[in-house]
Image (cartoon, rainbow, N blue to C red; front, side):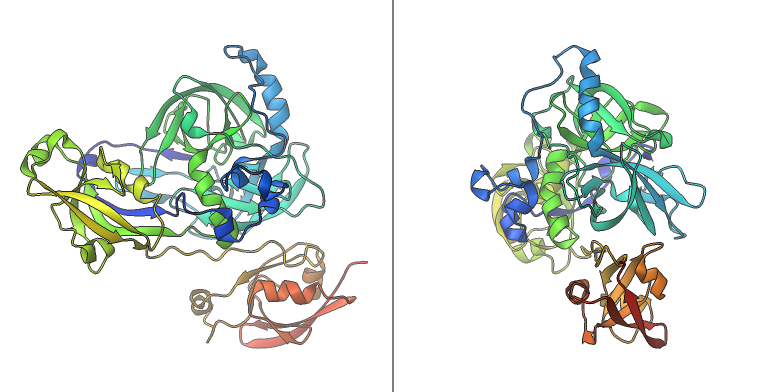
Length: 488
């Protein structure tokens, strides 16, 4: 669990670079993810693409706890707990300490484990082993171990992460359907409603706490914040666990606490996660639109100077050179009062509204300039620096081998002349791959005498029949063949 140290000084004067998520236009069809893959039923039975994320096995529409009867929380906890997991990580990276998010505010990672690691929580969203957690729970992890409610443990791999919203998607391999938890509607939640949190605070597995939703739309760290606030006790190690409504549906991902106050917790609304999870599943990262401006709030004095009534809108304090806004004619000193038909009541609304627009789409932006309204058409670009190369699920669960795409950036970091082959991201302890001598960091160039360029190529050739698999591997300056024998 990350802690927040909040300072209100100078907050009104801070500007934020505006960018946006792929929004309502994104469907699971767009990502290439089959409906049946997500929720185990034919696509014609779904009312909308969003149901591919919203629908979960075993969900119920009726509250299982009568309003105002806290004793009924036991029924909810008993039903949902099997879908909640504890996460423990091992890491050797020197960067696993504090990470600064903002000049006046910072998070602390979960308490360190004895050999350098962390603890956190997560919840299963698909029967085939997909788990949602926080990005900061698994950051820099060399190994990720999942513990289920029955005490069984299993290694997990990273499917995708979004650092800006602190959401991560990981996977465990399973040969049987796992219990899942359903998604609720965080927009429909009202302050004062009962909620339940389940997680791993201070490494105490499957701790259940209850409280209410204290507030909505809390902005603490930057452009993408839209937290739910709750007084259900959340502590270090609860990060990534679910906040549940009385129907046992997830309405948020527990992610942060106010330092020194364990009943002031903050939760990522699940409706935000619904927009991102299909992208994380399909590509490992989130593609965001880019408006290319820095904005700030309007004080009464600024509103008067820029001739804006009611202090509504976002004041543009900087325009990125050659960015979409500059090309469209937006200027420093403009006040953005409307974006794509939506009114901007305050400056911190604009990032989230931009976040709902697709890259490459032209939108109308209404600005107030010298007291007059002007509409400009802006074609949104893609936010620079949005990339992530995920580790795949095990290339072969029987061989215990995990692969990752070898990007040019990784090749340069490993001092390789070019990005050829597939990178070994993990070799499971006691597996045939480990017995054969393969190591994390090896570059697989060939499998069964066939050249490979990606983890998918490796997986395709590994699946072919045979008692053993021949690998050609580059390790440093050496190139060597290895034979990995299948078990049994």
